[in-house]
Length: 287
Image 1 (cartoon, rainbow, N blue to C red):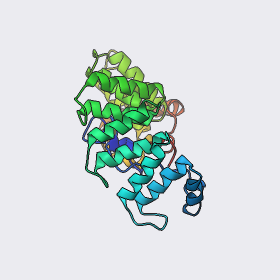
Image 2: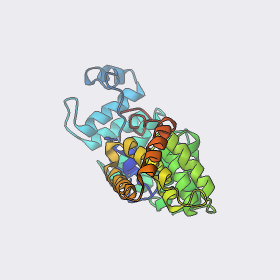
Image 3: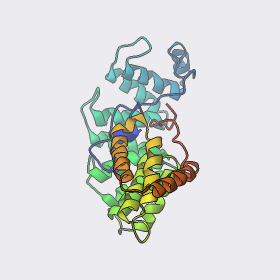
Image 4: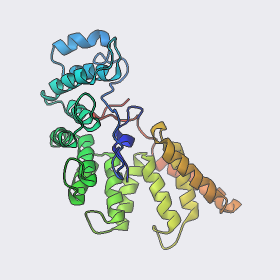
């Protein structure tokens, strides 16, 4: 299970001690460097023109205590809600995060669910995963694996790599649906092809355990662990460390010939599993 902080982090999206979505941390809209809608000197005029992204980013400055202001979550909430009322889904996500974390407001997963659902119903993939996470863990809503899986599937259809990972995880474990290893593998592969390290790692685990194919494939597993080690981001330090440990353990089991084959296979996989894109925030923009 992945938590909303893995996928939600600013250092990054999106987690609680859950298993399939990212751990919830302070993840807010971070526009591209140099954009007018993040420049503190230009935000005011853009906000005056009711630019929802600029309004949302004023809230972000209050959250981070940047741009000449001191950190103030209550002030940030006002700006986020203003942009959210204009139909801007990233702001809806940010309002939900403040409620989920209890920053500037009384902590409430129920309120977080309302705001994330609004964004999800408007096609926001990040919010779809967040809603699925709440259903999975029974936070703010009754626990319901079927509904969690439905929302993860929606996020996956939008091309969200974490959503794909979650679908694969539910299929492998048989949560909210019948256990289906072949389909789980397909979803993990789709996520891996987008450079999502946890999916590549999961494939390695399955290969080493003999869940893919008729028997364990240690060479292929090693190649996957090796590629995963190059795809993890700083936000996944703990997972990257465990992946590295398994890589070292498996290396001792392989012959020189097998290691050579694994290295060759790694070169092929490097072309199949693209390098991860820049970390995404709740609005889908790169950090």
